[in-house]
Structures are given as structure tokens and as C-alpha cells.
Length: 154
Image (tube, rainbow, N blue to C red; front, side, top):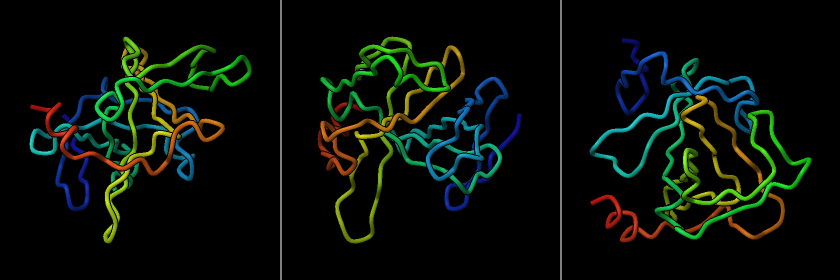
């Protein structure tokens, strides 16, 4: 079983079938297209989206439904992405899709989550995409509510 060696986090074992293909990469990391969604019990409900090809590139994520169970966004015709998302409504509880928010942990400010650009993972198709939503319906600096995240994970 391959292992991803992540600085400051140690190793994460994964199976080849757990690799998610991001056809467009992620913004600012367009050349990195293969990621693994890794979990550790001690960090729950947080997860790590780790680049298979460059494990030093990793993102802390949290399921959007833990932050906002009513979260939703629309993709209009023409807004579809290379990852195969179709026009329609995407909600925090989107069936076989997992919507993730990338978390930022600044040194001198409260932790925030990016709800303006959710990562949409289709585990069935083993693919993912980060959707950059137009407008200001959702914020890229949504404060984490530690109590809500901890209560949901118990």
C-alpha cells in the first residue's frame, strides 16, 4: 500500500482506487491533478486533501454540511466544469457528492472556511473540482464555529 509522506503530519496510507482525479487541478495548483482525501480520527471532522504527486501540498477541509446544513449553490447552463458537474442545484447534502470547504488557520486570527469556492468530490467517479462561485452569496472567510463542528463529530 503506498504512503504519502506529509511534512508535519507524517504518513498517510492509501489505495490506488482512492485517488481522486481533479482534471483542472485546484486554483494556483493546476498542474497537480491527483489527490487523496485522508482522514485521521484525532482530527475529525477535518480531512486532508493531499496531492499524490507533491504531498507537501495539502489542504485542510471540512464537510460543508457541518458548517451550514442549508448550504446550496446553482450552476447554470454554461457553468459546467471539466470534472463533469452538470447545471443544477448542489446542496450540502448532495447524495453521492461530498461538498468540502477548505479551511484556513492563520497564526493570529480565527480559523475560517471557504464557502465561496467549495470542493465537490464525486467518490463514485473518483473525481473532484473546486467550483469558484460568482457573486457574494457565500464568503471565502466564513468563521468556523468550533462548537458546531465538534458537536456534529461526536
